[in-house]
Length: 77
Image 1 (tube, one colour):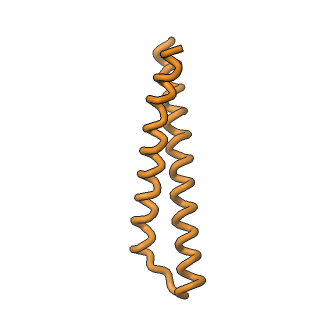
Image 2 (cartoon, one colour):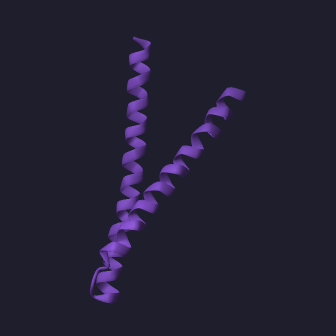
């Protein structure tokens, strides 16, 4: 029972982190696409897609690096 509960909590946490980071990356993608439409009048799709991927990876890794610090802080109390 405890194992199932832990698994559900972990899946929910990973799901929320994934969704939040994907949302941030999509906002970057939309922002750069709108910038291209306004300033250049044509969209460079192949330039914007790597920005989406890099933003997602950056924020995902940033979120991932915060967790051990918070865990370490709690365990030292």
